[in-house]
Image: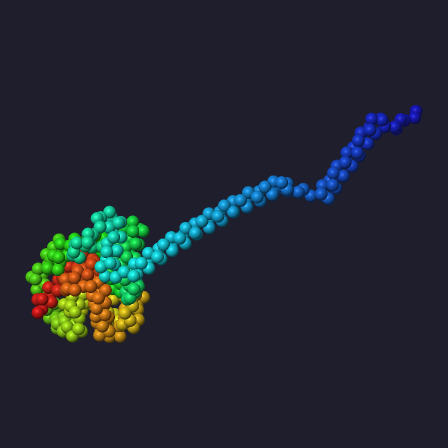
Amino acid sequence: MKQNLTLPVWLFGVAIVAQILIGLLGGLLIWKQSHPPQGWSLDSTTYYKFLEGQGKLNLRLYEQQQAHESRLRALDKKRQARHRHIDSLSGPALQSEIDRLYNNRFGRQQQTSGAGSGNRPQTDSTNRSRRSSGAEGQSRSADAARRGESKGQFAFRAEPGHCCPEQNDYPAQQPATGQIQRIVNGAGPGRPLPEAKARSQIGKLGLANRTGHVPGTKVQGYWLLIQDQGYTYPDIAFAISAVETGYWWIASPGHNLFGMKKNGRGYYSSLSRSGYCRYKSESASMADYRAYEQQVIAKYSLVTRSDYLRHIYRRFCPNPTYQGKLALAIQTLKALA
């Protein structure tokens, strides 16, 4: 019997379909390898709209920046004009401008023309880190007043070229005129400074002399030396130097007897890192103070000793405790005499 080896017809159909599918898959794989995928991209219309918006933002920012710089230039011109006006002032006119700035800040009444200089509010202040000679020095107190206004407060500082050792150790409230007068007469703000305390100070100096710490004759020696310098008010110079040097107990680097800082008088030879003057000798330091004394007397028309002493209390170092120490030093000098 003969065997039938033929396959069914349907099996041939399945094989043909499988071959077609394999060919399609291979063609798709070859096409993907020849065409890698591309990332997302903007069309030209969206891209140019984005550039246009960014350009408008840049233009607006540039216009705002130009307007801001224009306002700054206008304010700077106004400030420079104001500074030139203040630089042209001196004496009572300069003091009146300082008082006006202070009164405008705190809402106080303007000084009347008939008010005496002793009734002026204790308002003047200067930047001690700047030069104090010529027209440049005349406007520093008003500069400090303007800086106080801009910060919303009024900061009291020392005279230009002078170091106020206690400038941060007292409230920003000046003593009233009556308190200053009591200091001049020998009584500090809130506590008396009688001659008995000055005599006690002399006793302490004498005790220090006996123990070998401070030569008691050094105080008298400096008083005699200061007397020979031709100062208009040698007793005030003695008091300032005594307070600044601790009655010449504290060593003064660079022979700085009056605590001077950088100034335009030209007597110091160099400066320390903190701006303190260094002199070649004590005579140079005393000559610097003599120039300072003559300068402020002429500049502010200080006729009497009380006017000069009031200026020292108000501007050389307006610290109330410093004022009391000066008053004690003056009483000490009286006890020495």
